[in-house]
Image: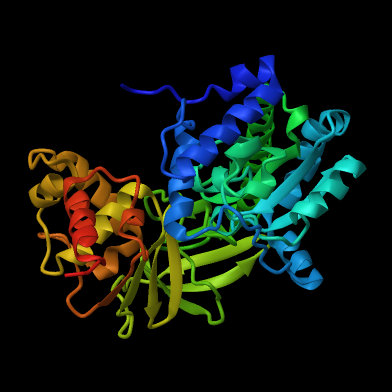
Length: 436
């Protein structure tokens, strides 16, 4: 007989103390491998399973060391979240303070960078290690309102004994991820925390709404910055013969001439020479502009000798990238879930895969070649010089390294592609992931 999960919102709205007792019973039974009256909510149960696999101790409060003050300041300066702190404060702090809660803002790694709100609650938070500079990643302190939303990429409320670590069970945390509106990359989490007695059913929707306002603010900043760069670059591009474009410091296109429109180009981590090689354009000259770069493409689109090392990083459960190094530069491109799947399959099959073969790997249907060709066309925009086609494959002279997660279940966990499911199953049977 299927058991129902705990309806925390409904139960806590009627009697928060009873909800806390029920959750304590569910947690104790679940972690002891026994049958409880109710199941934990799916998002909580799945988090508990991750904690058990990762060896987090539910009965001991482990704390990583705090960041040094200069490192905290550096991360604050580098974080896009500093631009939307006024939005977060205006949307959350006045209500949070009245409700005996605090606002916490963490970066993508789960490190707390800002913490404000009720003084009495701040003192209580100190007792949990919920301090600026602390690491509240899920794999460090267990299921919580900072680390868990960062993993599942959606708002999560963690009430009382839904926290994996027992000493956090007097607390409630409600967090929402904040993503970069340009590319969907996680840049941090905003969280409202306090004693479980102060939990309100509407908190989850409230925090999520303010996080979305912050993302809208970041989008407006990006558009305004590109407009300013475009006004500077337009008269310069009007005098350029051939292919050229103006991009911001992150490679987003403000204006271009002589070539089809591209949203973004992958720039090297550092630009120390006047000539670089870009995967979408070939050899280019680069000149600084206020707020960006003027990139002029030469007629040589081939990769220079030495661009042979490709690192496909799939080591994080939900954050993947591909890096190319050598020749005139090195760059890293963050991958969407679909592109991570495709590149992993090509790394498995170094001799290449046809569109039909990839369609069969991805969907179990070799006829779905249109979808595969469309996605591979997008992949080749940033890997074109080191990725061949007919069949699709990495260049023969490229050295390809794949960074895999230690736990096979964390290999592209979103994926339902038949070939990746087979790879995971084989790894679980053998005890480790293998390439080739």
